[in-house]
Length: 239
Length: 318
Image (tube, rainbow over all chains, first blue to last red; front, side, top):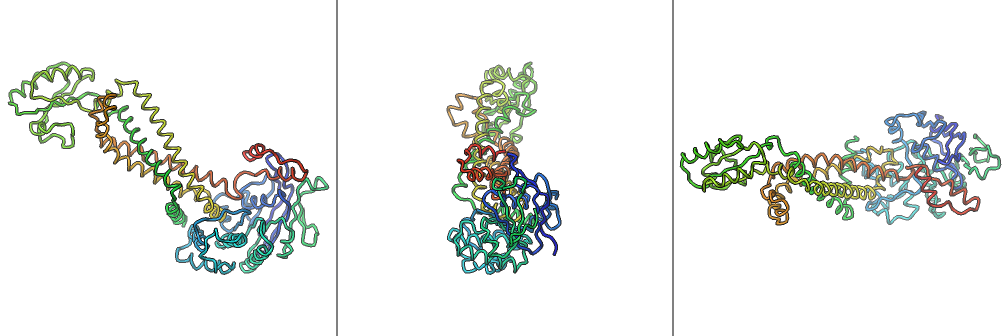
């Protein structure tokens, strides 16, 4: 299987010089599903920010679809970036719009012809199970539904890679289950490559994915140990 | 495709105006109009025009006069050393838009007396008035405007201070309006940025909107430029302060200069749209500098108190 995301020898330190990633490696195949698990401030969101080039690493390379994003020109990265869907941790909700309206707005803004946006929005809402709520306003949605909508918004432009930051954060167990079921369905249906982060190791268990465990350096027993990558069985796959 | 996206976003932006964002925008446009008008007026006062170097006096003929009398007046006035040139303007040649010209002059014609020095104006005016009763002396406002600027240096700091305050107020209100709009649009901006739309593309609708506001202000100034001068003449305080302004219409020129300045200013306002949008884009999810979340977590782990908020802000700035 071709590699979709490859992170090698990644080093990143905070402005204070505190190392967050040192010699970090990660590999994700096309169509694969990987869950990055770690406590607060272990660098989960930071990893996503590095993957979408909102931040640049001090050292190392990040390959997405065989392109080193740290060296890509803005134009080429912009093309690559349009193939990545992102669901942030605390997204801002669009007020004054309905679910279908929000999806149509995004599709139109991305250049889709007006006559195609309606059917496309309908198709996506059906896929994520929010079709019945299409005319509801976003303020009326439950937190779980709002998160599913964010997922729908992230995939509506047909990305090949989906980055999700802590999808079940602040959700009840039933809402979290529903969201993870939708996520799994979407991943399989669209053959998406998904990289999700979470504080809960159970997310990886529910999704049945490979997992990368990130640890805070302060918690580590050996000082030279960097964040490591473990498979579900607890076996270390890389460091 | 990209042009279509930008135009679509711009249209959506225009439709998303609420009272909270509309009133500062309108206020900004109004302030810009006033400022541009004042700036144009000051520019005219400061620079004048090339032909305004010499001062003209219009000597209107207000009753039927014999040809001999007119010839005698011409011969006498042209012989004065202070006078550079005297020209008789036939009634049919009189400019129809010249508001200062009395109705009689349009019937009998008038003399245009060009002086060598502006300082001689009062002397020549007095001589002309003493000449014959069938004359009416009208100083031309172009020369006067130049003189106002030269003769009253105390006016300059007042005018420039007022202009600067208006300029800054106008830019500040524009910035507030654009920033408010951009903040209202943060969810939309975030959604599109997360889909990979570049910051340049996301800023463009704001730049377009700001340019349009600036152009609107410039166009409004033209209308205001034709209304203001007649109003100025009716304000007693202005007449007392600068009596020469009583004869200062210049509507056409003022409007034209104001329009040019307004268009130039709209470019500056467009750049402000860019700044306002950029500032909001830096506050979106996953954007901005690396947040010192690690320091907080470590403090929590060690059971220490939370780092001081100022320290966090300092780190965020770094």
